[in-house]
Length: 118
Image 1 (cartoon, rainbow, N blue to C red):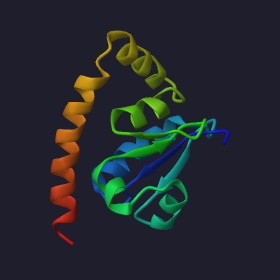
Image 2 (image 1 turned 45 degrees about the vertical axis):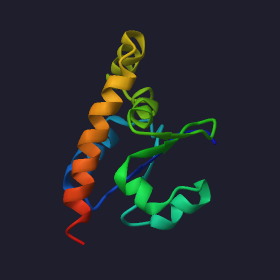
Image 3 (image 1 turned 60 degrees about the horizontal axis):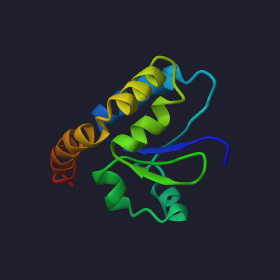
């Protein structure tokens, strides 16, 4: 694998907007962006359940490691202009666990709102 993969919910307006921002910065095409709303079957080859990916953002690192939550974001931030500095800062300050707790609260709420409509 030569670039990380980020699995995102393209059916979520907030997620689409955030990923569109990241994709705009990814001019060198360093990240594979997989919309699980359009192609949920792509998750299967990595052993990720669709419901898990809808609840928490997932990524596959360049070395094939499965990442979730803030670790998934950091994986792609390292490849993006400007955000690579944020990834370094988060790592340097050792605040990944705190950010992950905050993200999980947000993700739970997003999932409940998004998926209770179905």
